Image (cartoon, rainbow, N blue to C red; front, side, top):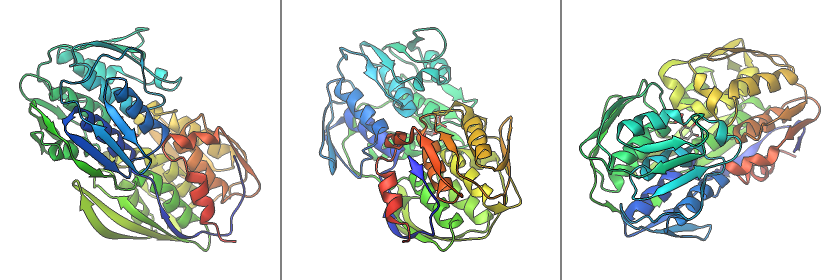
Length: 426
Ligand code: S3P
C-alpha cells in the first residue's frame, strides 16, 4: 500500500459495525432460543472467524452481507466440531469462545494464526480452571492451540489482574453454565458490551462499580441487534480530520458507549475541534455523529482508568501526538505489548522511521510533537490498527509511505482505503 500527502479531507463517512458487538452477537445468537437477526454486522475477517467457529458447532448462520441470521441452538445445543476451531487473527473469538467451550459436553481444539499463537491465554486459563474447566495449552506455553474439554463449572469470584473485556467476558460466558453466581472485579472498567448484551438476551446480570455479577441461565432469548458503527474504526477519520490542513469530516452513527469513548476525551483534552451529536441508543448502546475539523492540538497525558476505554485507539493517538505542540505521555498501557503486535515497539520503531521524536517506556510512550514527518517503509506486522494509523500518518508526511502488509485492514475494516480515499480533497 503506497500513500502520499493529501491536501485535505471533507465529507461524511459511515464506518462498519462495532467489532466487539458483532462477535458477541454471533455467540449470544448461537446460544439463544429462537432466531437472532443482526444488522450492521462487521464483515471483517475477525468476525467472520466467529461465524465460522459457531457454524462448525452446528449453528445455522446465514450471512447475506446485509443481515446475519442465526438460528440459535439454545444454551446446550452446540455440537462437537469435527475439526479445529480456527479463530484466525481474533483474540476476542479465542477468549470469549473458550469460556463457552469450557462448559460443553465435548472436547474441542482452538487455534489461530501466528499472531494468535503468541498471545497470552493463561489470563483466561487461570480463572476458567478455578471454575473447574479442563483447558490446556497444547504446547504448554500458555498460548493457543488450546484443548478444551467441557466440564460442570462452579461459580467463582475473580479479581482480575488486568482490565480486559476479553478476560471478563470469558468468565461471564462460563458463568452462564456455572453452579451459583459468578463475579469478576477489574482494576478499571473495560468495555461492557457483554454485560449490556447479556441483559438484552434475558440473562440475570448486574454491575456494581468495577464488578460484574452473573447468575447461571436456563435459556437465552433471541434478539434483533442493530450494531452501531465502531468507534475504533471511526478513530482513523477523527485523527485524519484533526491533523490534516483544511479538513472537516463527519463520521455517522458511531457507538459512543462510555466504556469506549476515551478517544473523544483525549481529543478534547488536546484542544480538538470535535462535536458529538447524540442520535440514539439501541441495545443499551448510545450512538452519535462525530464531526472533526483541522485543529491546533496540544500534548496531553493519557493514563489511568481511561486506558481500557481507548486501548485500541492508542496507535492512532500516537499519530495525533506527533502533530500536537509539546509532549504527550501515554502510560499504564503495558497491555499494548500483547495485542495483535507489540504496539509500543511497532509504533515507536515506525514513527521513528518517519522522523518523529518518540521513545518507548515500560508502559507506553512519550512523544514530542511538532517534528514534520517524512515518508518511510512501514512494517505493519500484519496488525490492522498499525496499518490504518500509518495510512493516516502517510497522508500527512512529505514523500511516499509504503505500508508493508497493508491489506491486513481486512481484519476490522475491509473497505478502509476506499472510504478514506473518497474523502480526499482534489
Ligand atoms: C475486545 C477487548 C479488548 C480489545 C479488543 C476487543 C473485546 O481486548 O483490545 O480489540 O471485544 O472484548 P482486551 O479486553 O484483552 O483488552
